[in-house]
Figure 1 (cartoon, rainbow, N blue to C red):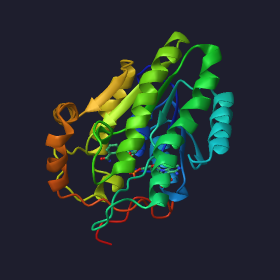
Figure 2 (cartoon, rainbow, N blue to C red):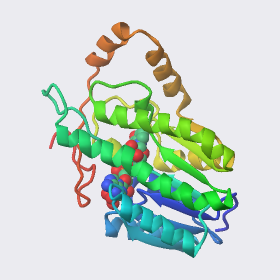
Figure 3 (cartoon, rainbow, N blue to C red):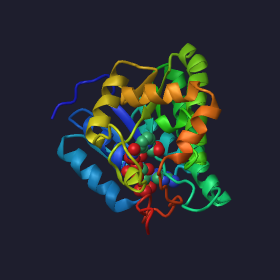
Figure 4 (cartoon, protein in one colour):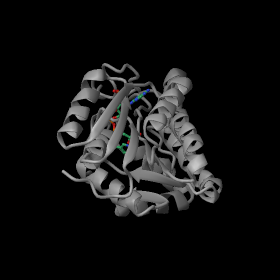
Length: 275
Ligand SMILES: NC(=O)c1ccc[n+]([C@@H]2O[C@H](COP(=O)([O-])OP(=O)(O)OC[C@H]3O[C@@H](n4cnc5c(N)ncnc54)[C@H](OP(=O)(O)O)[C@@H]3O)[C@@H](O)[C@H]2O)c1
């Protein structure tokens, strides 16, 4: 398979599962070099093997995105081997308020912020540092539509994704002047182990392959933000614009079960709310 697109050397975190794995497969092809990371070796190697079968040159690394030094070392080593064109910070976990509890556990809040916010920044900051001398390259951060409005069943998740989106929006200004691209990706419901752990209505849910295709096309066009599905995006934008006094009771009535976050790499995000 021959890959046609502007990026030849691509680094992806969270590549062992779901959207990250689908992105790796979507980009795999001859003349593409993929640097893939996650914590679970078996799942990561399965994805790498599929990408190699499509002709890609693939290197894998077991890196926890919460470990800033480890991520920076990996990014720097990969860039020294082949200058990186595109970095996609996709690693993430879900988590929220367990049923019949008024709030999240403090450890759970920290785990989500450390992975979904700091983990993404641990990835894109060293990436921008190595791209800057060439004044070329793009970083993409995978947030969520859940960051558009605080959701009562997943406060830390909403907050981490909202903060990441604000960071990307701000970063775009200075990074753009340095010739670097910044893209924020806001997916809705995608059929992955992370989303399977959440019990709720899931309007317009799509496959990881479809999500990866949308992200890949948006990145090829150099989009500042890639949001999907559009109908859910606009519904949440309207909800965010309306007074809290109107929206809070509606959101409180929604039946949603979100598990406490799983940070164990042998069982990440795979708990179901009923377990
Ligand atoms: N699925 C959805 O509906 C949805 C919607 C909106 C946004 N998103 C976002 O999309 C991204 C990917 O999620 P997904 O749905 O594809 O979930 P997934 O299938 O559970 O994949 C999550 C990936 O993140 C990796 N990961 C988790 N914690 C990590 C850590 N500390 N260090 C390194 N890697 C870590 C996992 O690998 P290991 O366990 O092997 O480390 C796995 O590869 C996340 O940022 C998520 O918030 C998903």
